[in-house]
Image 1 (cartoon, rainbow, N blue to C red):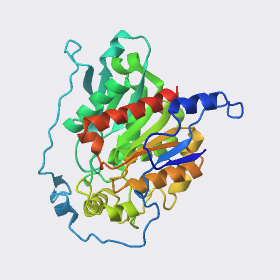
Image 2: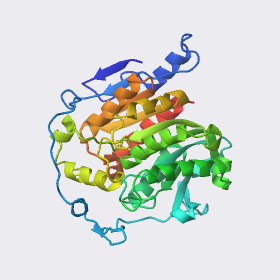
Image 3: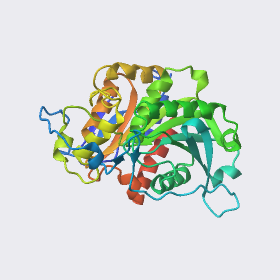
Length: 372
């Protein structure tokens, strides 16, 4: 693969269409087409070397996150973000239909499936995006309005079926509970006979996708799924990791530079991990830091499955250095990966800014189209 650094622009040096035609016309790589690995960086915006400096956050994680611990090990979440109901009625004047389907009643896991209306009038089946929402593993839901709107618009713009998964939250259910729920969701998708899935989904064109903590889940669930029998899950084409949520015990340059960034302050970040990771481990656990311990070796499973990976991020996200490091490590391990990084902005910008979300949908649509 080739790495192309562009400092003056955030657009790829080569278009996805260029990658596709280049590799398909190349005899040496006739077995598959490939993308050039492109990092899109601003001059001096990223510091890729981890720092020896450590900034301790000795705050009470419950107070830091505004959680009230209960004697039975659960927590009370005083803030109640708005939620939106599904809209399954085809007679409604809406661009995207949606409905909730139970996955595992004993775990209270379910999927909200989004079906673009255009699918009702076309015989060709659509890609499936299996989406995992953000919220630091601790907050929010597939029904949260912020993610309902995101998935609704993504289904419409990308022209894909979206299955947004409701997984168990920490600290009541620490990791790997969310990863286990994600793999179970994939097995459920493979066997479920709901008509929206069977009539409109191309089961050979499935992508695991998530934003923030959901990006972490998509990545780790992908590793878990790569270890199970291929016949138990749909055919996964790739992973789409939007500002994936990773950390480590050593601070990166972007974490130090953006220590007090209001959308994801450093101490809040540490608190989320303290309440999400298995008890007794630190932030260099492989769930949290894919570049530490056995993490790099586990990437071999992605390579062996032949999956593509899209990682997106922005210069104003404290986690951006870790995201770029992830792409670089994947490239060294032979994983077919594309990095797409933009200037400025902040962690979770696509959830709050419709224009940024629409730009992201375009990147995702191009990525998917180039693989077909």
